[in-house]
Each structure stands twice: as structure tokens, then as C-alpha cells.
Amino acid sequence: MASLRDIKSRIVSTKKTSQITKAMEMVSASKWNRGVMNAKSFVPYMEKIQEVTASIALGSKDVNHPMLVSRPVKKTGYIVITSDRGLAGAYNSNVLRQVYQTIQQRHKSNDEYAIIAIGRVARDFFLKRGASVVLDIVGVADQPSFTDIKDIASKAVNMFADGTFDELYMYYSHYVSAIQQDVTEKKLLPLTDIAASSSKLTSYEFEPSAEEILEVLLPQYAESLIYGALLDSKASEHAARMTAMKNATDNAKELINNLSLVYNRARQAAITQEITEIVGGASALE
Image (cartoon, rainbow, N blue to C red):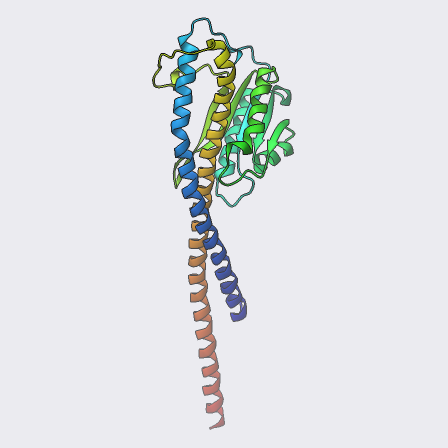
């Protein structure tokens, strides 16, 4: 059985740990509130640019943009969004598990796909497994702006345009609630399902031609999809980390209570033993 000093030391160290996890929980709660607001505030823009893009692309019969046309698939690109660090429960592992399982089912060799990693965890995961990581970005802010990822988003779209990829998928954690985040797969390019994803189509009068407008609008739309997924993923990350730190704090408190009970029992037993020895010694002297 552990000594009183050892038990006391464990109680003290566990209390310090619980203070740290409680502080991390409060920090994550603050970031989570802002993250959810950022993700929700971006939704109206996404819906509008999607409506405009779909209306122009489908409303003009002669439009034939490469980003709207499927082609034979020789190589597939995967944009994987994770965090830069752990301590967020199953947030990262859920995304990486689904991506990796999908890749193993779809591809027979590493030459058939490449990874675009947003987040240190995703980059390190695929590099350790010998996958081709063609682009990566780490150190994304907790409340990211579009300029933080504009470079990698435009490069990803350009790699599809120049034929590096024949299709591009995106994997991220979709925020549902503080305790639920769902791993989501979205086909980013080609934009073959843009009509199905748009709730309504509007007739527009525009100048210059539809092809010239789509030449600018389609890359911006694809980049905005990546940014919207990043905002959604960040809200999920903060929620997952807040929940994980709350669970850690609760577990620490439970452990402290159990250790305190053991400590009190051991201390009481030691006191009883001392009293017994004193009484025994006194009886021997009589």
C-alpha cells in the first residue's frame, strides 16, 4: 500500500492538473463561441455565391468551363483539415481514420493520390505513412481569416486546373453542436453537383459573357468552399477541446475524491495503530 506521503503527493499533483485542464476548458469555451459565430456568419455568403454561380453556369447553354466537367481520373487530391495540436479528444483521429480508410479502398498505390494538409497533425500523419503531401499549412489562427489560407486554396484550385489532379475531395469535421462533430467528405472539384446543392436558381443579366464571369467566379467559389470548411472545422476543434478538457477536469476531481478517501482511511489506520501501541506499552508497564 502507498505511504501517506505518496498519496498526498498524488492528490497535490492531480489538483494542479485539474487547474490546468479547467483553464484550458475556459479558454476553449471562449474560442468556441467566436468560432461558431464565424462559421454561421459565413453561411449567407456561401449560399449567395453558390446561388449566383449555379444560376450563371446552368442558365447559359453555351458555357463549358473545365471546373464544371468531369474527366478521366488518373490522380485524386485530398484536402484534409485537422488541428496543429492534440488534447481535443477524437477530433483529429476521426477525420484521419475516415480519410485513410477511404484512400485504402480507392487506391492501390501512393501514385494515385496526393494530400493537401491543413494542420500539423494531418501533415505528420501522412508523411509518416509515405503519402505524397504536395501542399501543407500549419499555424492557422484560431479565428482564421481568408488571407491565412488564400495561398493554399488558390494553389489547390490551380492544381486541378493544370491537370495535377483530376478530382479533388475535402475532409473536415462539421460542427453540429458542442458535443457532436461529424466527419464530412465533400467533392470540391469538379463542380458537377453545383445544381443539386443550390436551393434556387435566379435569372441574371450580366456583362461581359457568362464564360468570362465564370472564369473569375468559379475559382473564388471553390476557394470559399475551402475557407467555409476551415471555419466549420475550427468551431468543431474548439468544441471538441472544450469537451475533452471538461472530461479531464471531471475525471481529475473524481480521482482526487478517491485519493482523499484512501488518504483519510490510511491516516486513520495509522493513528489507530499508534494509539494501540501506546495503550499496549502502558499496559506492559503496569
